[in-house]
Image 1 (tube, helix red, strand yellow):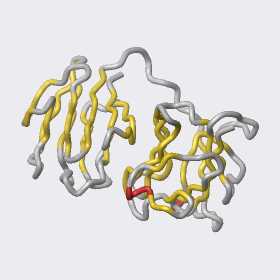
Image 2: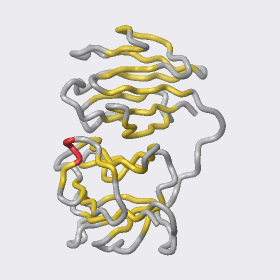
Image 3: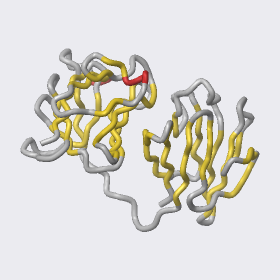
Image 4: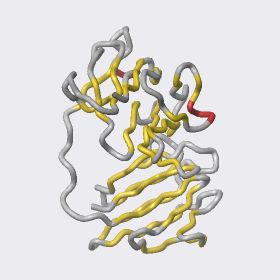
Length: 214
């Protein structure tokens, strides 16, 4: 299944599976792929899938859409093509095989129990080991999520989202979209990616999480 890997300043912030015939890209929350950056238009571009091929089309964006460094209006995509939208770089990968199964999720809520302000996390056993995040408050307190993917997103799309990316030196958390941005030990990740250390505390969408690496 084709997918996009979205990065900024060489930090991967999200991976998106292209499961629809038409996927929209833009700054506004209703898009299928939201890129929260002022250089990105509200409705910036679309990717259409047909007969096993993907086509990228700019839909009148202010700053343009680029593929492998060249401005395009409409272009068929090839595996490993590099797309530039605003300050973001998007790698297109054709992918193979069946999509990964959908994991059961738990909603991490605020202490008041407001699910709308919460964070969704895959549900895992509470005895997991290795790099992970642990919920500290709300109805899902003490649940943990192992950081086994190259990129793990936290938050609620259209509200506040952050991404934890596995890097050569550990795990970096960065801002993806929404306000207020997530914080690590009180420092906003909107200023730039932060390398996590064991027992760092993350706050996002009214939920408190702890990064554990042992």
